[in-house]
Image (cartoon, rainbow, N blue to C red; front, side, top):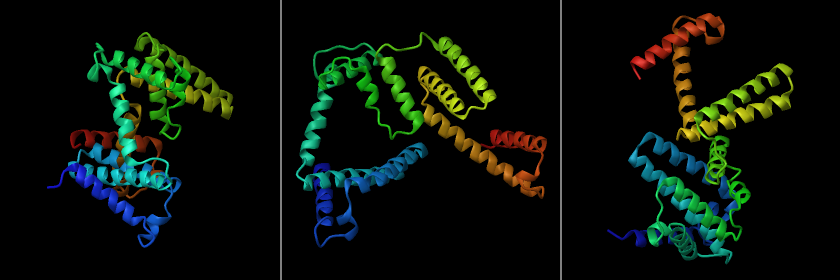
Length: 266
């Protein structure tokens, strides 16, 4: 069986061939900009495969994503911007530089200490020592909001801007909830939006403090709600009704049945 390196080169040559004048019309017309939406889509398909813990599907989605990354590189290589070898050389050097405790003589005693050192090295690379604002500003704006909030929160915490404990964070969350209630009472849409954002950000902080990924937690809850609502619709239909035709009391009664059914038969 050919080595991974040989197979990698073969895949790269397939992309080169697709981009030739007599290649594939679709591949020929692609640009880095046109590939952005495909890249996001393939990344999320890989995330779903990982959530399903399906090795065959993960392998397939990894291949799709790898193809797209090499394809995007090819577009820039054709422009004379950089080569795939330069990309690999750059990331290899970066990983060695950012892990002096593995590839050098430095010693780190905890994951938190390692994260702090990582950020210090990044700041040094940019020639802006302890550039906290830069560390936050470099979190991609295109990330899902909860994931972006958690990354910003993590980077701020790694630079010393941190809650003393979860009790202190809960107190701040309580404060934000009260402010949100006041905003809702006022009926001011802009104020409601701001206070809702503040409350969500504090929930993300609590997620980080408890080592819980907020994005994954909300995805899981949303999936759970979909399962429960689907069963709720089935129960309502079996009784000759739609969900909308039921009173709130009837909806809640069926909802409790659904939760019990799914608990007993997950």
